[in-house]
Image (tube, rainbow, N blue to C red; front, side):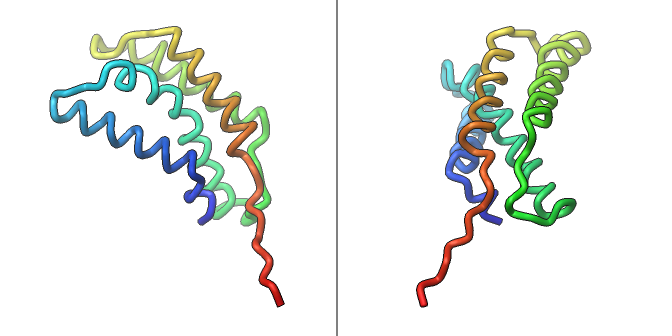
Length: 124
């Protein structure tokens, strides 16, 4: 459960919620609306994947994602949101700055967030 309590994961989810609500109310926030959600996309997705793997598959809080896992998420998100969706719908536009932000988010997740859960020892 501590995986979902990561401060960066919570911050990313709160940013997404703020952006979602600002869009729904018709008051999108410049730059935050267009870019900061892309920066948090890969860390949030990877953290959810890490939580799922720790709970359902590996069953260990010491498990971390490999560089290949994180690269896969970056490539997948890039393909889905910057290539496929813009081809299928006029609602979406490809922006290669978003790809740079996905990569930065992936590196951030791997270097900062992708850590084993450390058990706190009780003092006897």
